[in-house]
Structure formats: C-alpha cells, structure tokens
Length: 305
Image (cartoon, rainbow, N blue to C red; front, side):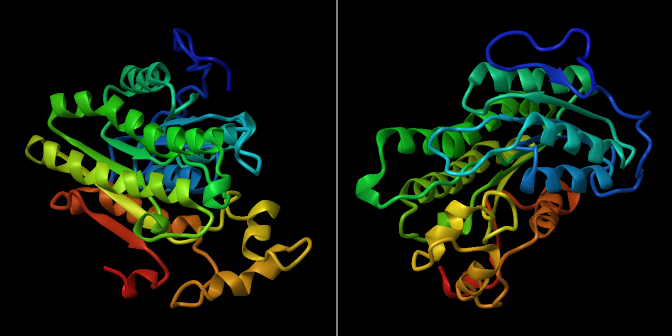
C-alpha cells in the first residue's frame, strides 16, 4: 500500500495511501454500482462498515480518517493500520479504493480528499460524513478544550466534509450526502451535553442544506443510530459512565444497562445495521428523500416526537 504518485499536497492532509485496487471488477447490478463514495472516519467502526457495504453494492471508495488520538477523548481512536485494513476489506470486494490520513477539522485537508477522489475516479457521487468522537462529563465540568474538540470534530468536521463536496455535486446536478448524527441528537443525555449539542446541530444543518440543494439533484439526509457495537462504545471509560457503581465494569456488566435504554431490549446495534440505512439513502431508491432523519433506534424513537 505505497504512496500513489502525484499524491496530496498542502496542509495536514497527510499521505495519499492505498492506491487503486483491482480492475474495478465487482457487482454490476448493485444498489450503487458505478458510483464513487467518500466515507470519513473510515478506519474502523461504522465508517468501515459503511465503506464495505457500499463496495459490496458496486461503489468505488474514497476513505479518510484522522488515524490519531485526541487528548480529550477517553479511548484510543483508529490508526493508520486500521485504515489500511479497511482498504483491504474494500478491495477484497473487487472495488477500487484510495485512502488518506486527513483531519475533518482541516478545511485544506478535506478539500484535498475530495480533489483526490475526483482525480482518481472522475467524480464523487456519495458523501458519508461519518467521522465523530464521544466524551462525557457533568455540564459544569466540561472544559473549553473538551467542548472545542467535540464541536470541531462532530459538528464542524461534518460541515467541512459536506462543504467540500457540495460544489462538485451541484455542478454535476447529482449527489447523495448522508451525515451520521445519533439518537443523542433527538433527546437530552446526562453527561453528554457537548456531544448532544453537536449531534443535534448536524440534524439542523442537514435539513437546511437539503432545502438549499433540493432543486439541484442532491439529497441530504441523516442517520441517527442508537448505541452501536464499535470501539467508541466498547471501552473502559464508557463502561464506567454506565456502571458508576462498579469499580472496573466489563462489557458483560454494561449489557443489562444498555438493554434497559430501548424498547427492543437489545444492548446495541451491529454497525452493519446502520450501514443498511446508509446504503438505502445512497441509492436511487431514496431519490425522493431529502432533509430526513432515519432513526435506527432499537425502538427508542417510538416514544418520541
């Protein structure tokens, strides 16, 4: 997975990795066959699941991830090795893939990611603005650094990702933009004020951009998952948040706590369950849907709105 010649210049965009995969063999009748999809936060978790799901349905992929930790986030983030593994999984489907280490908080980096995708594949048809972090604290104990990092990654990073692809999609009069919000963007959650604010903001931004682009062939929607079985959820810091009465809670300890949070009584979603919603919104079948929020909520949404 060496560097591709004529890689990305400028800013903190980082090295242009992965290279083009196979000769483009793969599904010719898939839901997104022949399309090109950008996925942020693709090193692992939901981002990886979305990338693989899109590839299996015929899309070529442009992937990026920060691939580094953030000081205010209480668990390790994805790595360059994780991102390389996602590339390998995509290429194993027979689709082509490029990847970059890039920070969604960095305008130059996201512009470079989009430019590189267009240079490699000729277009970007689908944008999945998925990159995100979570951290927690009592409202009065949230520091400026904690607030700034959360808003910068989850809300501003989503904005900068979407802004980078919008001119290209307007020019082509075609595009599908899907942003990852959260069921936390539909309600309050104790100890998660900054996360809730960011995820709620994504929904407002999605609805507004959908109105602006509705007549230009571009749809803009959001997905709101409940708890998802990814490293963002499965870590000691998160276990302690939901089991404060236990000294060193484990995955098994938190299962009943998570089961009690939704009506289906399932502790968490597999990331692939969210990917099915993303895939639907990315496909032609959802061409009449824009400005909408698809809740994959384990039944939580049944008692809301």
